[in-house]
Length: 195
Image (cartoon, rainbow, N blue to C red; front, top):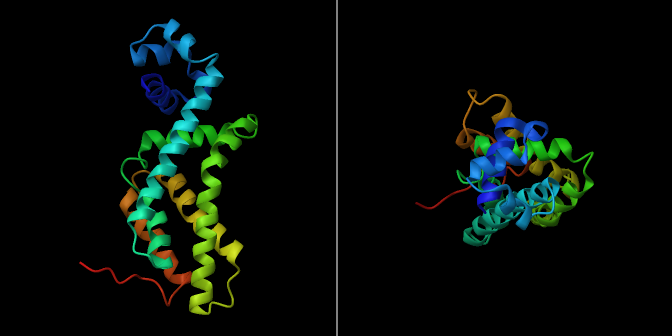
């Protein structure tokens, strides 16, 4: 775990091209031999780092989903809210996510690692959108397009948080995403939340 956290730190500061195993070991305060014991290569460390972030994100939104009220609207809102949790939505983690996504074209393994955890999230979003479309009689909405749009709300907000950190914070972007749901599902959003 110490090496993965050090890799996150280094990638967030230096990106992929300037991160070396020496940077990682110095940040972790461990010897180079410890890295070699746990990982065959720098690429194996990167795979483990992306796997850690993807699993962390997965476990976070599942926790939010488990705590949500049983309605489709509350569960969809919970998935969106989870993306802006202060444990996963930090400048450091977002920088590393975008570093990985920027390399995905050249390293297809990153897509496999990411999708191992993220595909289920998309399926849940699509299922919930389908329930809302059916329940609300939103005949003008297509489930797949709506689900992709809802998913893009968080991804776009993460990008804006990276590019324009002074424009708004994670809470404001969360609220913007939740407000956007009122455009898709006006009979279900905004949610009535009990105090």
